[in-house]
Length: 106
Image 1 (tube, rainbow, N blue to C red):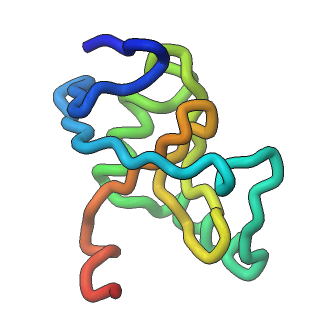
Image 2 (cartoon, rainbow, N blue to C red; image 1 turned 135 degrees about the vertical axis):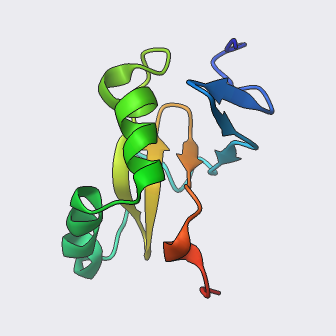
Image 3 (cartoon, one colour; image 1 turned 120 degrees about the vertical axis):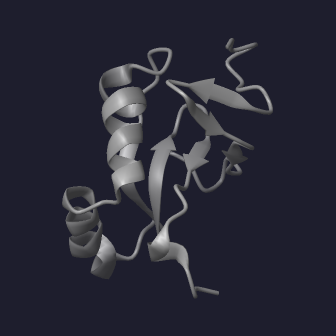
């Protein structure tokens, strides 16, 4: 696995976990000041403590403490009216781990 020009390739494997395809956010969302719904802040904190098994494993084994090529990731990050599972603002990369919490939502 390699990073070319600080960009993730189309499909990445790390610790047996497939990240495919990486989601990219436009730069205006990830500017220095990110707007968010303050009403969701308590929920985001709760989700950090009570995440899914997949989120816990991905965080513990891959994304925490700058283990993924030295990039900093944040968990349950607020962007406007959304809470994303993981975000690397430097790469403009969001990772959403599918699970039962995403079912029946449109």
